[in-house]
Image 1 (cartoon, rainbow, N blue to C red):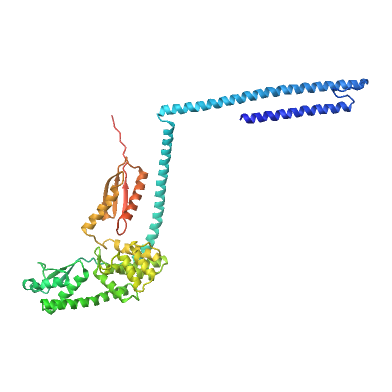
Image 2: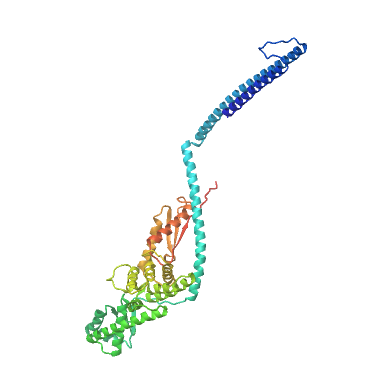
Length: 483
């Protein structure tokens, strides 16, 4: 501000000097015009008129000089006033700075905080605000994404499930063979149990003969062996001759017939799924899935159902129904091979498909249905969706008590290891987990972020069909006392 005042004063002085010089030059020209010598010169001045004019000019010159002196004095006064004003402004600025420092010291004294501490608190408030905005943005994005995903998924799955209402068979680890009479139980056991020992030794299945009327229970985890044992026993009952030699002969007959049944089951499944041109070895492996179960769900029936679901979803999305149908039907054939081939069943199935002239698109979709490889095609994602939809349908699969308890324990462990969690409840057979928070440990925004974090950890650490709902509950309390 002082620099601006000085500039104004300098400009005014230059203008005033220019005015004085101009006035002197103008006066000199007039004197010359009327014959009056300029100041400092001598010449004739005898004419009365000339003398009178000269006197008038001198009087004008004197008046001009007086006005210039007056202006100069006024300019000096203004210069002094400007200097005083500049000094006052500097004093006021110093006073304002001192007052600011005094107010900061007063605020520090009243609040008990130093300026650095107050700055830290301000930054923390700003961080909390940004955190709140981030949580609100997460909620908004999740809600928008969920609404859009729900809308599209409902449209696709509603059409698919309305067209597909297949039943399912929940198979167990036992088979029951009905007897014409309880007298046959003694013949099956044989003298000193030699017949039943021969049966169990050949088939590898337990024959349970108890008080169940007119029935023998066959128990075994291998569905193929259990089926061979059932066919063997039924043939022996029809023949009537039950002794170790006949049992061995009948066993090999049943084993040969079962291979034919397996091929027939594979052909029927391919026909039902509308998949043609499969290699005979793939047909045989597919048929073996009839005697495999996954969580109590028959794997062959599950595969056929997945083929229909994947094909219908592919039609809805404009993908290749043929590729999706074929990959979904074959996606679990890795479960049909023996333990001699190591590796996840999805990768084993993909290798088998390539060896028997299936396309790379089909093999890739088979390998990706459990994310052993990253899905690269729409058909691979559809096989995943069909597999999850078939397995997660209520009642489609069962779980053993040990697996059920382990899954609930794992869910609760993932939630309880987070700070601020008070109690955790796994509900709906592990389909939902509810988390009670300590109200003082986390705020509402923290609860939103915690639910998002726990859901991501469950996705990374656990294997489960369908989806698991994560609900975080934070209680708000207001307490007062009446005195």
